[in-house]
Length: 263
Ligand SMILES: O=P(O)(O)OC[C@@H](O)[C@@H](O)c1c[nH]c2ccccc12
Image 1 (cartoon, protein in one colour):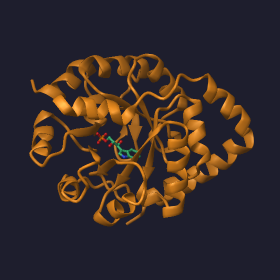
Image 2 (cartoon, rainbow, N blue to C red):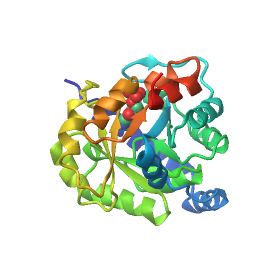
Image 3 (cartoon, helix red, strand yellow):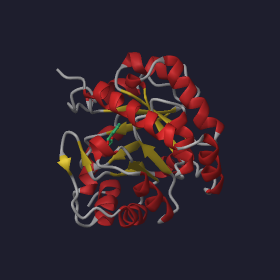
């Protein structure tokens, strides 16, 4: 089995080294200062989950396992459709080599709506947190499987220090334990194993019972329809991160509404 996550992070380290050489920290600070303040990401999810489901709707053009997902890709239009359909937050893929993402997609999506936006990328260096804020991101992703404990804490400190939220992504009980040593109480369980791309909802069911009550708990990946969400809700899960199944629909607003409320 090839470990795709290791490969992606190695590519990312090279990319970050080149970006750091091309961009000073003071330039990033100046750009970050021009952005509107972080929109509360976890708060938006919690507010939505109190009376229904908290949806993080993902703007995703392609993935390594599925190839091109959407040909007529239009980040601002998708952002508005997700917002009108009832999403609480957005996630925007910015990794280029594996997901055909781009920072411009995040900036365009965030400008087009009022929702908080997660930068979905592979963070291997705290420098990327300031870079994320400089493009407007309200939250960043920490993938526990990709990082040492000390690296995770540094990245989290950088995010919280800038007033951003950090979504801590785990996929087994040991990673959840490591996540609990961090300060964030926003936990995502990836049903997809980033090492081999297999999807299993049992990952969420196993971990939701182990997560402390004060956590905002998000089930991620492979969710296709309202029945998937209600099945998860029976296990106490109220927040979801969904990309592909929404991005494949011609009418994204209606698809988002149907996912949340049923047809
Ligand atoms: O498109 P899906 O199966 O609905 O999944 C969305 C999201 O969970 C997935 O894109 C994802 C979860 N964690 C990640 C980490 C990196 C890149 C992508 C991801």
